[in-house]
Amino acid sequence: MRILMVGALSWNPERIRSLHERGHQLWGTWGRSMTWDQGPYEMLEDCVRTVAIEDAARTISEQKIDCVYGLFQVYGSRLWGPPAPGIEHDVWTLLRALFAARARGIFDVPIVFHWGFDVHYFDDDVVRALDGQIFCNREQYVHWTTPVAHGGAGLDLFDDCAVVDFLDGDRPKREFMTNDFAPRLAERTGQIHTVCIGRPFHIDYVAMARNGIHLHVYGNGVDDVVNLVARDLLAQRGGRETGLVRDHLHIHSSLQPVGRSWAEVKEKKSHWVREFSQYDAGWSYIGTPYSWSRLQDAAAIPNRLSTYLLAGLPVITDYRPGFYRYDQLARLGVNIDLEGSDYARLLATLEAEGVAGARRHNAIAARADYSFDTSIDPLITVLQRARDQYFTKPPSRRRPPIPDRASGPVTETTPAARSHLLSRARAAAAHRIAGARQRRIARRLRK
Image (tube, rainbow, N blue to C red):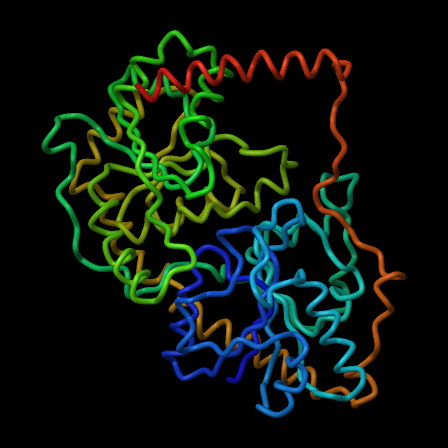
């Protein structure tokens, strides 16, 4: 197919090269997003032609593009990274411009959106006008469409779309799933070594350290990992155990290349298996990372899960049947359940798993099918379905105008409502005291 991508490419942008390698021809009009997510994508320069929004409609017509493919995450503007040349608008502004151009007859192809998990707001008119919608999982669709009275978002934006499907579209490129497995650190040190890629959530660092479990954290290149750990230690009243935690906590630089050439990305990610396979298991989310409702939490997709599988690692998780992030691990047989705060039992499970455990074997066996490459055929099938369905309509119904933005409501998925149990003065004082304690703990962790 000939595809114009619109938006941002999320955690594994180089995966798009696999589409190109399959013979698909690609163009990109990039939108504002978080620093790690936002284009331009230097690693795609030789396989994706970047198009400014002013030229996108004409390019669709002249290049006989088959489909507009919008994606992926939608973050509020306060989270955006610095603007880059030619990248000035959010994805809804870009798609609204394309809908307006299509209504004028400049081009005549379907517009499909692939929803990532992090979607903070909708342009209601644009969403209702989409010709196809791909949800990252069924749990997200359930959350968005379930009535508010039953814990959902109560959205009716998707009701009239004829083409709907479910597909996780941001998994690693298969070529990085090498067989360059490293010896386990545990074989050399006699102790268990686990890994967390990205932000650690709700790990009980004191219980972990008391049971002799080491934690290696690879930051995301944005957050200060030591401060995150210090904050959680403060909340866990573990400040007095800082020395013990420090002995079991190992902070590493991020191995997630952002804004790099394909050669640099390939060099970095080709070492992922070697780097991460030395550990005994990876940490998923423990508990609920943010103030999510139950249905929203059930839809969460930690990017780290596919990275752990790439390296053939079992995954530590709390027991959460009905949650996508747990059910996927259980389906593959790679889950190591942390039951309550029983870190002694977790240690015993990790020691029993060893190098030849069933979970590690299952992870290695499952990883190829958990790559982006495996999702290409289903993705193309959905885009083709949207195209076939689109051209069953008469031209007058294919290109209806959408209202001006001024009259189009915007729906937020993360309301700003918050509790005000303390007065502003008391809350500010409490924040200053907690901040000072956190900084003291962070300094001790860094020693």
